[in-house]
Length: 270
Image (cartoon, rainbow, N blue to C red; front, side, top):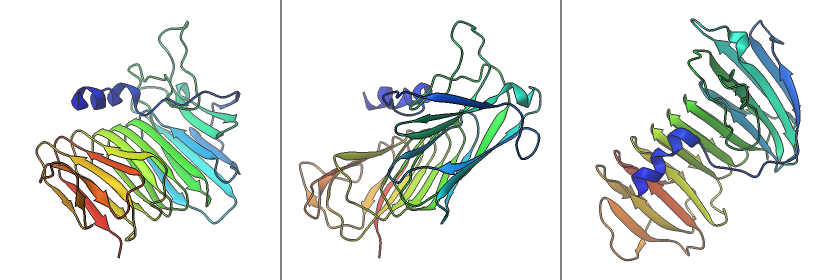
């Protein structure tokens, strides 16, 4: 069941969000260089800056500025880079910026929308890499199907989804991430999330670092790897090197770590 569910991520490349009312702005030619896209603007604290890359890497870092900044660079060997549009959508939840590839079905055009969009590459080899600067308190949502995601030293919560790529996150907030073929590492400065957060992959190691004074229920499972934790754990039910259930501190929330091929490490910030 778990294998079937997570393999679906390859097609979905993330989770669904409720679409909001939106307006479109499209940039076909570069604003910095030919084939480049540049956007800079204010994203309110607590709102989301969402990047949908499809085919390409996403590199995000913190900025002390009150304005977020996004640069997208298009590369290709065969296809025309200008066939791929970079669209931005402003909505009540923040702003979404997407790489939108030409559709092979005029009745079902690709479009940029909040959440997991329906854009597909369709034999187009244009790679779009995003460089993102994120102000404190702004939530980052990063999605790509084929590419790595790196979010470094951020000051807000992070969601990251890649089907074919590694994910690395460090933030003073909390995070969650999913991949299919790739390792996941995350350092979180805030363990006060509500409900459940998940880190899942099929092929790859998961290494999560939490604040020393964390309170959460833990469920971790792997098929071919080993599970280890630096936290004292009150065991619930069966627990072993490949399936671990228990409570860290006082519980109160849930943390799920799952991989099929890879180790799981839960580390404590010193």
